[in-house]
Image (cartoon, rainbow, N blue to C red):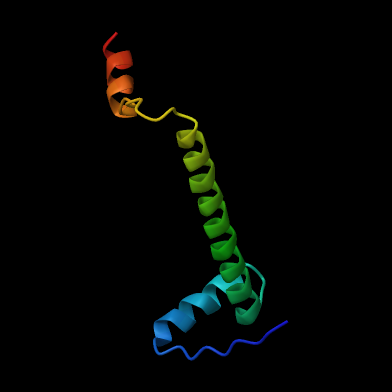
Length: 79
């Protein structure tokens, strides 16, 4: 486990964090920990999404032109 010390230059940010912590029945430290955990988890999910999208894209044989999905959606709506 590691420690991080953060100096907040903006008093309104600390006030907002305090209000969020109070609304969630947590300490400010616990609220910040929760926010950081959520941000890191969301980043990992986004990176996993991009990795999967690239893997799917890689399955298309070289030289095959892929149609822009917006064109396919518009064509389907026009039908």
